[in-house]
Image (cartoon, rainbow, N blue to C red; front, side):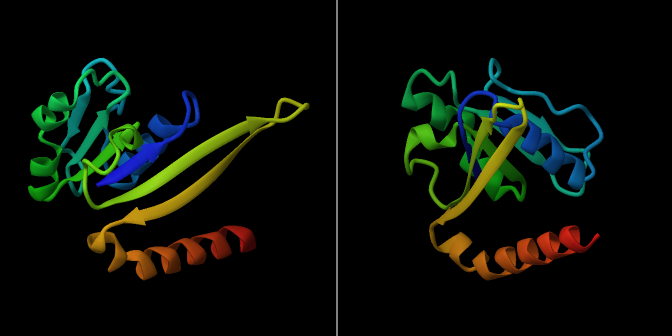
Length: 140
């Protein structure tokens, strides 16, 4: 379970599109704002992309069955996942913020945090991979 937080236009759907491409998903990944959930099964793993922005009641969260989708071996990415507090359990939490300077140059700040023992056991590997990727991009 990956929860994406950030204001409108911060890049949550763009993040999900890039994540899907990394999994080998070739179909277009679009924001599920009005449907609440889109499923993509053409990659190495299935990707389930939810958007809770228009969630009207907490009962709808259970109706989406995100826990079951995760238990089936798929990756669940939830935009606006922070609005339901800890109802989604263990998760990697990615906060995206952006700003535009006086020269109209956009920048993003990405903060990554975790919640729960499931991600705690993966944290060191994740941070090692991120550091390696950053070091490679600086060199190349």
